[in-house]
Length: 146
Image 1 (cartoon, rainbow, N blue to C red):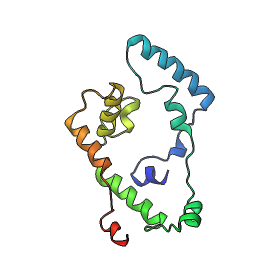
Image 2 (image 1 turned 60 degrees about the vertical axis):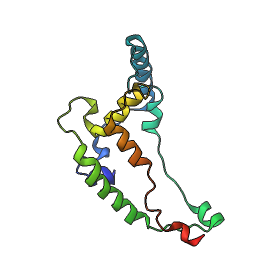
Image 3 (image 1 turned 90 degrees about the horizontal axis):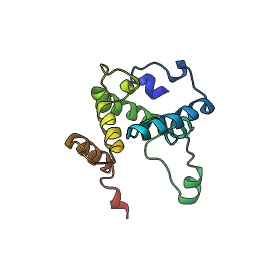
Image 4 (image 1 turned 90 degrees about the vertical axis):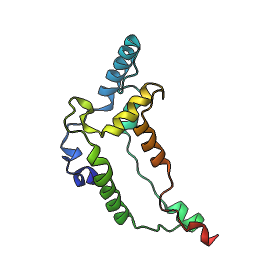
């Protein structure tokens, strides 16, 4: 929620949540409709758990077993992440698009559309963005310690 608010969007907590038991049957109906019209629609039984699950990660085992220590403290890393999204994602956010898809960036929408087409016909822009997303970040000089 802090990232969403940091980008200038309204709080996620201000939205009316839909219970899992309500939205899953709708997703199943949407999947049948998609099958009937020959399209893979974005709301389906796979996306519901992905959108509703809570995710959090603990590093205690890595600290204890591997001697891991974060290079960047969590709060500083979180602030850097929000800054990156503000500089790189937000300029591509298409406020003019209507409907439910209006809450995501254009290049994210392109990736979803490419996936829905089965990976065929990816645009050069999407391909470039995917390649950039796969590039290692901040690993220069890390092998010096080996």
